Image 1 (cartoon, rainbow, N blue to C red):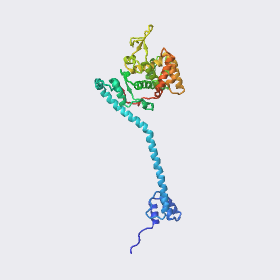
Image 2 (cartoon, helix red, strand yellow):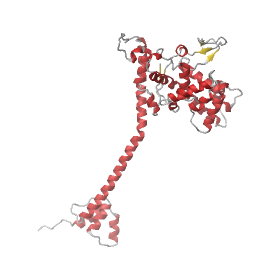
Image 3 (cartoon, helix red, strand yellow):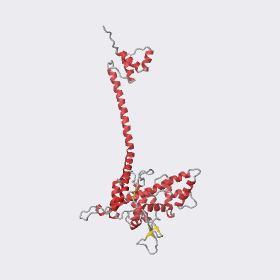
Image 4 (cartoon, rainbow, N blue to C red):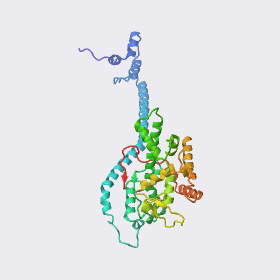
Length: 396
């Protein structure tokens, strides 16, 4: 008769303990303490060792397994919530990166195809009819501009919500901008044209300002840094290398104020000076390079300074506010905002531009009205897309 070689359930549990080297069972063995089957099962379960199929403590084991499952589910839930939270936190970054990639792709297409578009300027003109839409009254120059903004998804609503401004730089204003029937659409188009130019010039000033303070923070400067400083003193018309004055002058012009002045001086991009000479800020000159005003009084011999492109007009305007003695109060008020760590606000600084026009304080009131009615303060915090990195820009 064959011997029964089947070992008992208790012995199976003890063998498992030896196999997985459960220290707790070894300690009990040394003390010669007899453990019940249930106790051995619990020790094995605590050490995450699967029990044989037979069990003398099914209820207790079920309870322990349930608790372990609950803990496991809680951990999984926490991990899942953390993962979803991470996705939500990086979503704006992913959205921004996607927007930048799309912009870069479309901008490259425009760069390669714009010459063809220019050659086909007169293509697609429609015959006149009695049911013209608003766009039918807009010539191709403005139509191309609007199409570019639409294709690049460049809209002011998104910018007001925090989206970066697309680096689209127009060299000239569309000649037929005034033909846009909707006043709001005309204004929005003008803002879209001038804002990237304003932000880009401000960005350059901020880069210089950052470099200036870095140089001033050093105990000694290199020859290159000294040359750089001399050039900045010259750029800002500062005599005797006055560092305090350079810090006062080398600063930004808030976007809301610059847009409001451009709108006022150029009639929202429709004035003769803006269209013929890219003169968006109505700066005067007594030299040859200017446009003669038609309504000039007999004792006036000035002209309106003209520029080769819109960017030049923006740069000259900022240099004017940052250097002319008539805007000293403006610069001091701006420095005070810096000192108090406050935002450089157009509505704050507009009060100090009464010398910009002959109408004085009345001119200030008009600018304030433009800023408020068009909610231009929303753009004081606007930034250019991916500024400081090698983003493709579109210059037309």
